[in-house]
Length: 129
Image (cartoon, rainbow, N blue to C red; front, side, top):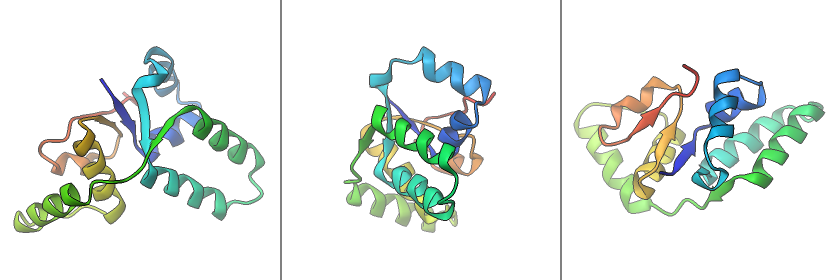
């Protein structure tokens, strides 16, 4: 099983959320990954807080240890977005990119963002509960 961590899950991990931290330790590191879209979101967060030294260290250490997968699922994204529009559903642009990425590689998306429930075939787990 491969688990793709969403940005909010990484945020919980860095803040020391006990349930998220426990699950991260329980799962083999080789089964964890993030999308390069998520990496971009993390780096954006760091750029907004240049003086947050602890945060910079924590994020950079995390990025050294997790597989960052290149986003290469344009066809899946296009189909998914068109399907969402036909059904009158919407999801934030970056979330849709991350959701398409998780679907494309068959990963479980680990997030506590309920908006991802709009993606019918996406398997989601919330490690905060």
